[in-house]
Length: 482
Image (tube, rainbow, N blue to C red; front, side, top):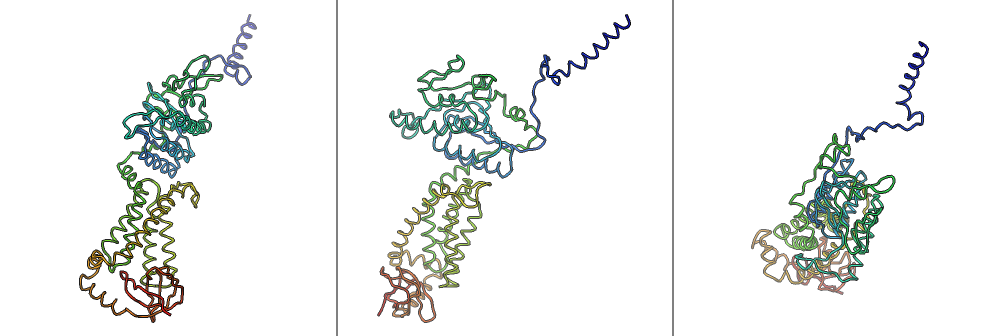
């Protein structure tokens, strides 16, 4: 009897040991699994970027600023707080490219709705979460009427072309981030139906829009969400669920400066023209006055636009001013040496281009052709217009009352004008030799004095004799003599 009780006790002890260790012995456990909890991160940084307005150019500045700040801070994740009806496709494409620069975790939280372009941006992130009763989809391209007051029907060929282009763009993002491509295409193309495991989610002729419950429903074995990784009550709850409750949290706030920067960058070529013409007139008139102030102000606003847009750093404005200083040294301190002038002109051109190049913390030192395309196009157009205006001003401005007024305001008044005219009259008839090719402007040496001169349009080769026959502004007007 005692042996039987002992045997039962030993069997009980063995079972007590073996049952909790079935998994180690290769036997499946039948006990319920404990609920999973996210791994808390003791340190880290997350950035919250709002996408809570139409997808239009000002939003690009907000997102670009947020992504660059996140990259500079080595952030772990960016969460896009989404609530938008959509917007422009070209802006959406630019935003997708900006988001792709960030190498950490990217998440979209659909706060209320993510329609059209908002759905595209969501798909460009690695994870999508949705608030209760939120919706996502309806991403077919539409054409707004002039003034943006309504929607117009697109011609079939135009609609097919736009749909194809958008499908290619979004499909690439869906493949990259592991989203269901069939779902994405049903949101874009109304000719696509969507049936999964017997559930008719979208009929041909309609555009797919999903509620939070539909988007998070599991399909397949093992179960995989249709699009959303889950429905979460709030942004704070999502941060906790992702395991970032202990992380530093940075929220990007839109500012009025972004909209100001949009307008500044829209008129960037005009600002360049004003800047070039203003500086030219300032160099051609004695002293320092209104043309120089206007020119420098135009360039300052140009660089301000790039800075607000998140494109350029303040250093390029400093580089531009240094270039002006070097050109001033070439003209007034070391004439004829060319080193300072060439260095200054190079520095100015580089600063003007780089002032509008979109660079990121991990970008290569030298920008790509794609990054340079827009700044070079704007600069080329502005310089072409400026050169035409400068040639017109060089020919006609000295003969106008405006020129005399500018001179009198920037130097010592009427007395200086009289002294300048007397000096110019005394120089008439002087002969010298060109030290560079005049085409039509250049430099010539009169005795030991090197002077900026200009012809009436003809070309004069280097080391040819010339005579002063008049003046164009402050520059002597010369012609070749035998």
